[in-house]
Length: 420
Image (cartoon, rainbow, N blue to C red; front, side, top):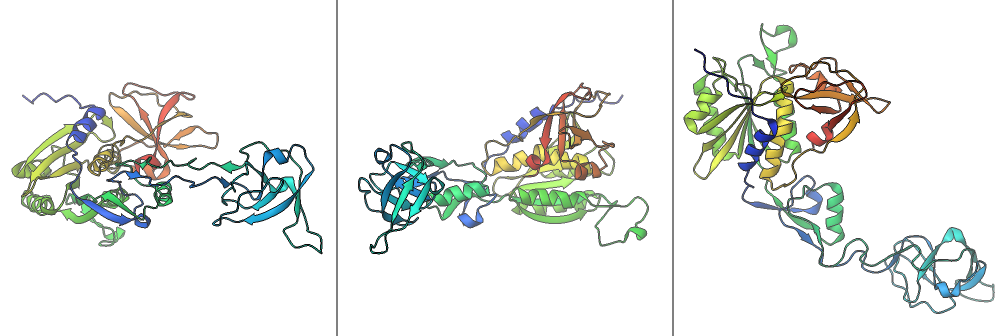
């Protein structure tokens, strides 16, 4: 009698169980702020100053006292010229200061008039000076003035530990004088594929491929996705479908890496040697996840001298491998680096397609936005059709048992969320 099949494991439960194993890696790197894009901040950035450091002008124009301009047409002598990076003198009553964007507002001034609301008048030929200005609008107090500390106050936590740094955050760190940042070290990942049917592009031309052979596409997108997550990747290539070869590759990979990632060999086929090989060295859980595509998934650990290397086995079908990486491996790798918010953001979108047959598993349908703002469905949703991922700009996260009709609101996850 065949053993009863285990119930499918919900995707959210699988992710929860994985993240419980993802303790942040030990060790920090110190990098220049220039080189910190994509890294994860290990130490919060606290501002030692306020930004901007003093009131400054947000326009090219004239600094004035509102009390001196109670009606349009007032003419005031220009007492000084203040450029960004310089400091002016206190503004004398009854005068205006020529001022430029970013320049400190002189003491005594309480408003800026942009130059389009003013008319510069030259000084008489017999006189030295900066001339005068006719004010053609009545200013309000605080007009076009950026207040000191408006962006950042002294002592504020500007960036918290666990933040994955983007160009905007690098600029923010630089604005408070941070030229170096403490970041989590890069996860070291060993990547290999299993399967005697796999051939690397460039080794055999298409017309000479043997029957049953396929090019190893998974290796390319998995390596690229790992690099985008800030990992150091060691490519162990294609491991033959033999248990001894698999054990040898796992031993070598576990010694120096935080995570071993494989593609293929996690089903129950006769030639799938990953499960017994990992179990001979450590422990392994082989899950059947309630997601489509991407049902088979393996997680385990291989002990080493200090701690253990994590092991994850992805299914061999390309779209299954692609999506299980995006939805399970990606958040795990981010959590290893100390990122707390690892879930991809979704948005509501309109379906412009029909999905008439509900599935017992949660489905991730490859779709693309159309010119009308809705979502079109790729015509072939097979787990082996990688064209669907290249064609689409995201997936519809469709709950189990759910059909979709044109006009329905669906949950859309952009590939930009899953691949960043």
